[in-house]
Image (cartoon, rainbow, N blue to C red; front, side):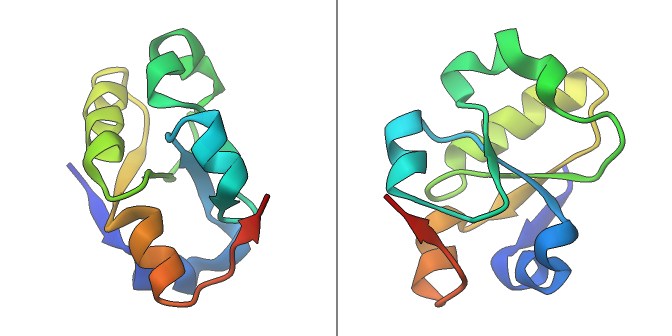
Length: 100
């Protein structure tokens, strides 16, 4: 499984394709401005929304759900990378977020 930390993801900037796998209420509360939301609970049904031309960076709150999502999508031959530390580390490090 490929991984990246939040500092590396931040260095990629807005051109990085980021999918947040948290639930919609979590995503709407705080998110990376250019991320899209495909909740882990809907991932099987919505896997087709994950681009085939990667890499695609998967993020959640702390890295557990995104790790599960990465493992599943790798089995579907999707070019995915798990973001270690998740949104808690992203926001805690002062990186750009949208709220509400």
